[in-house]
Image (tube, rainbow, N blue to C red; front, side, top):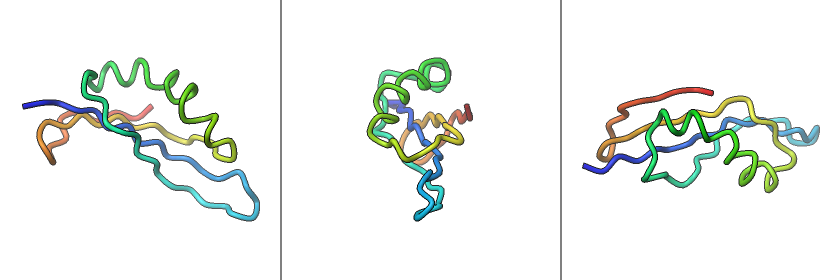
Amino acid sequence: MESVVIVIISACSLLVSDPRCKDFELPPFVELNAIQCIIGVQAQVAKLWTPSHPNWIIRKITCKERHGLDEVATEADI
C-alpha cells in the first residue's frame, strides 16, 4: 500500500482587517515519509508557500504520513 505525506500549515493573517487563523493543506508528497518531511519541509515551505502568502505568519507545520485512505501512521509538528 502506498504511503503519502500530507503537510498542513497553520497560519494567521497579518492583516488588521482580517485577523484570523486557518490551516492550509499542501498537495500530498508520495516519495517522502514523515521523518523526511520533518527534516526538509521548512525549506520547501519557505521557498514555495511563503512568497505566495505574504500576509500570513506560520504558527505550526504538521506532517502526516498516511497508509491507505484514512490511517495516520505518523504525525509530527514542527
